[in-house]
Image (cartoon, rainbow, N blue to C red; front, top):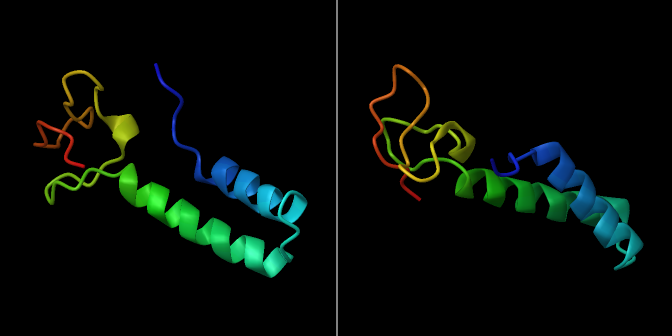
Length: 77
């Protein structure tokens, strides 16, 4: 299985990167991290209007949703 998407871990890594490596202020780093996490959340969410579940709730090879009462048959990016 692949690594599951963890928005908190991503947020912390982005903030520390911009503070430590790029010498940004905390406010600037937090603003950038919020944008990055929001973009990644959207990227990891099925765009099927009937589904909306995360990529972690889909079987990777057959792209079938793992949520029992969901009609989604294919992960739509």
